[in-house]
Image (cartoon, rainbow, N blue to C red; front, side, top):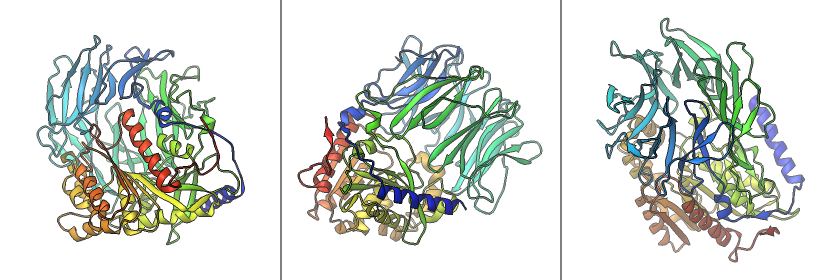
Length: 638
């Protein structure tokens, strides 16, 4: 039934898109104006619950900031002008904070301490070891973290005393397990183990007996993801999709071994958690590419109402230890994430940040619309459509098929700066959730296994039919754009469907799966076999991987291409982009290559976003709109 409703909705959207004109003149904004919009995330309450710690790129580079719960000016706590700083937590009893950082985007994270006087020290100084914060102990005298200093392939579990800052190894991970939680009585650690991308196991480690137990043994493909222990250490919340297309929330009783249902929805439940004293239960649902949050008072059974908010997605809920306050983020297609605080006693919410550059009018940006279209085999493909305001009736605009990262990612409703920038400059964008995307059931998710660059690529090609049928897209001016796995899809499109798209925009994308799978970072070891299962094993599937790797077939590329690459990328090595650019240039095809010496896998610095996104727009204006780069339709320019 859900599929039938989705199909009807998709047809309705197509009909409205073709028949209704929503033309209006808008101001066009520069990339500098878009990048003066602030990106923020994370939230942690101070011990007295008077301030909130979060991460922001307000300075141009991510740093740690605080803002009063009562509202007011934000305070910058760290002042990096190079490497990004990401806030973790206040200390439980004072104003010190923890944050994480790496060097130039190499993803070798360290945990740092910022004292109240502003001095900073590295708590995990092993140069080549990766450290990840796992959480505070209930007694507030220590925190847990993972580190791969003993073996670069596996993250062991440590406990750090916050008086001495000595770290004690409490579990050596030799099985490729993924940490989930430690019980309050310290007797149990919950782990998961990835078998394949749609099959995982759930383990319980007893710290007293040192026994590791598989809690729910199974032979079939089932996803099992432990989340957190109850306060009394007697039960464990977990997610599973056993006998269902979608994940749902369960509770496992440690003593009896019995499981009971907690929450189920018509979509994937992404997470579930209890507040500090278990007064509230928070559940996040992936509802057709939007986040739906349910907050329930466990004492009364009634949902918590949060009224008088702008239309948008409420995400990243964090309830204070007193359970009197809650932070959350609210965002929409036309406005980025803003931090709010909610008072449970008064029922009132307070907005604490204004992230959108005040020079940009939200009404000049566009709302995203979820649509569906049929692929080559009649499979229904979800996608998110962004239509420029300034398309006049009868005019046709250039368009871009946007492909998300992954494999297995998902394009979702929300503010995406580069998409709004491109749409504001006259480009229709269709963000495709091709087969293999998450969020649409485990069968859909598995449809691209060892078929990458094939059926999933055809889904992207078929998106052109939808765009053309709108009546406002020029069928001779459709390009493809994507980052990471989406960048691979761009290269695959230009290689294996060389006439399908008019240009390609590859943002740190894979060109050679053989090298990528042979050179994955060592800390991906726990996921390596699952990745091989989905993509292919470079030892045993060499010919297949060469067949789907654009580098080995680059002579087929005949359409203009721009490639963006971080020099420090540990996932897609720079040499891959070097080689694909060199190979395509031999075809005498227009190729632009933009390298960022201080970035890894993705952008962290605003100045690099400005340079990269400006280069993309100039490339598209020249090679997709036309040689003169003239706007495709009339608009009022700044």
